[in-house]
Figure 1 (cartoon, rainbow, N blue to C red):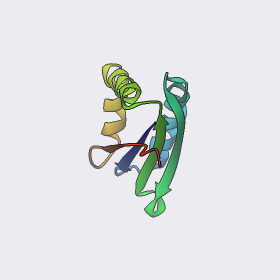
Figure 2: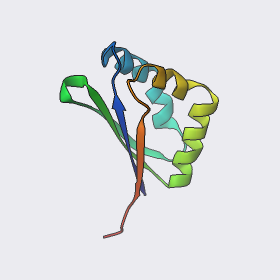
Figure 3: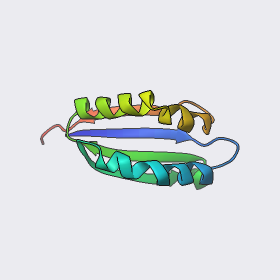
Figure 4: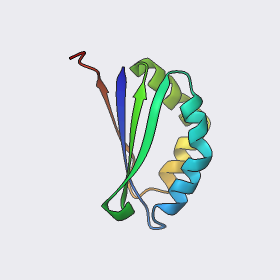
Length: 95
């Protein structure tokens, strides 16, 4: 299993427009092949948004990320942010 952490720094408009956008796109993310769980958290009173995602494998997540990039959704999200997203992947140690 692969855990994905995505850190977003909200832009000038704040977190609400991002949450509204996520509400429309996350059902497709959760239904994407290999997505096992996805949670969205607010940090620092909405100055940051954190995704914690669990994927069947890193390859599944990479296919998903490629799809979001090709369809332009990633660019739409980045336009609402103060900085590019920080994406980290970690593999289950099996312990």
